[in-house]
Picture (cartoon, rainbow, N blue to C red):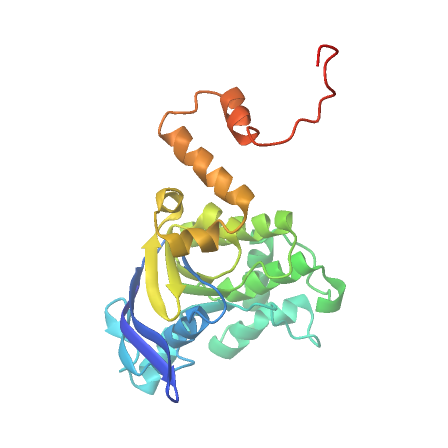
Length: 282
């Protein structure tokens, strides 16, 4: 579990995060969402120690990461896996070498032990037998899966994902989301995801923190969003008329006002122009 308490962070005279608190639990996908400039990336960087907050606490299982000494921070970082937005694979290394990199840095395993672990995580992300391929030979989705394999190769307690679906088509995005969700549950990882992908929000959002201009505007889960009356959240999540209609229909359905698919179609198409030719009597 990671607990963020009253975090404040600014640069110069500009405050980017103002008094943000959140609890992100193990075994669930914890999403940070918000428009560009809302402070979500700065918050994540504070959580992993890339930025030092001006005020507040970041607790890893009750221990304040900010106040830790260098050695204790290093131990926490060994328990963190990171999936970067652009995958961040080393172009000059093949898949096997990319995934083996953290093992070489943080373990004293021999080559056979490291290779066995590499093959285990490649199997887990459904990419067997690609060990000797280079990043330039992989598709975008394959790169993300290799990067995810590298992120979990050390069996981390905490997994941070920065825009994991950036640049991917919708179907591949769903594959990545499912992998992240499955690994989170399987290994009881505290997973924190920074995303703009609303499909991810609705598919894997066990806990969602919505940031607005540096403040915590809303928190809840993917089911709560459907019934939220927070205008800023609704304008962000359901930006198009189509998505707003889908939300309205879902609310009506939950309320028992839509009894079958036919009534749903009638409501959705009540304002749509007819595409049928006029009858002879008209």
